[in-house]
Amino acid sequence: MEKHFYSNGKLLLTGEYVVLDGALCLAVPTAYGQSLTLSQGTEGKLSWISKDVNGNHWFSHTFDIETDILNTGPDAARNEDVIQRLAGLLWTANTMNPDFLTDKKGVTVITELGFPRNWGLGTSSTLVSNIAAWAHIDAFELLRRTFSGSGYDIACARHHTPILYDIKQEKPTITPVTFAPAFRKNLYFVHLNQKQNSRSGIERYRSREKDKQKTIVTISGLTQEILRSSTLEDFESLITHHEEIIASLIELPTVRERLFPDYPGAIKSLGAWGGDFVMVTAKTDPGAYFHAKGYHTIIPYSEMVRPVY
Image 1 (cartoon, rainbow, N blue to C red):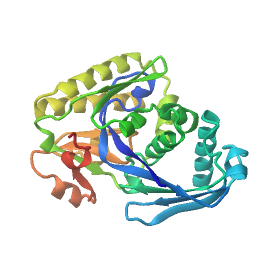
Image 2 (cartoon, rainbow, N blue to C red):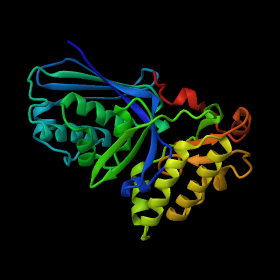
Image 3 (cartoon, one colour):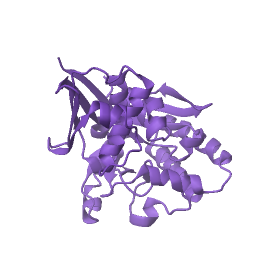
């Protein structure tokens, strides 16, 4: 008998980097996610197949459950980083729930992405969320023990509305909110044609020896103002101010300065700076501008963000 799990992708609209230190952020679950399906497998084996958005196998491997996962742990030398990370995730899930993967019947696992892997919408976080649901364990704790990060992506995986998210006393606080501004038809997401490694972005942020408390307070206030903004002009002013503050904190130029200095609307980096998607404002379809610069993945807000029914 098959079992099916599904988790939403994510986008962090405000609070990048400083969410790690307690700043309030606004995040949205995306209309794109990842599924995980279980079916009967070969005795003692875990057969794993990962499919991309086109249904092609981008990863497959068969583990011996006893020797490759339960008795090995995450630090064993393996040829492939994906195999090592996956085995580590499964091993950690077993340490959190010793009943997980102890059935000798074997299992076949098929994961299917609803978005291209280079989009940065949460290939890892949706996997962590799905494995945690399968293993009946806390997804935030599984993330903490494996990939680290703030956990906002796990919150998006499990929530179907925009959320306010922060970390208080090392515990996530999640508040479902309504974020459906009248000007959402003027919001678009543009992919920068490259994948950003969030772990390296976090390491860069952590390496900055700065007093961040004032910035945390300021960004938390901006997040609330952005959530409440009622006009496009106010929203543009607020996200531009947010960009300037984070640029100063991490000592990097804004994406506008780096790539789009002549763009007529506002531009906001999302998540770790340097790749994946940015959010832009536009009074008319911005496709011609970005196409001319070589950026062809432009998604309206209404198509990117998970609809609320």
